[in-house]
Image (cartoon, rainbow, N blue to C red; front, top):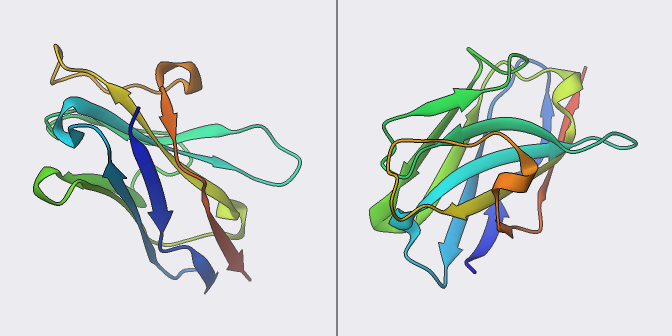
Length: 128
């Protein structure tokens, strides 16, 4: 498995921006597809964004499309989630996840069960 550590969460006003980072170690990061998920209090964990191993393909939940951007820097073993135009409903714990995908560089994955490694999460709070 790969070890994942998220950072960059915090408190921000509605309309503001945050950039989350997901630092990976323990496995070749460039072999992993990456996803971001979030879980609000009292709700189930949900998909936010995903990027393929190559970085060429990305996918987003409808609720964040056009506001969030997922990216990765394989040289730094780090994935990012740039979050703009934040809304109070974006308040949640955000988790990054990794899936070993050595043979497929172009697919990204949107289901929780697709991933085999998870970070501990970083909290994002958006105030009105």
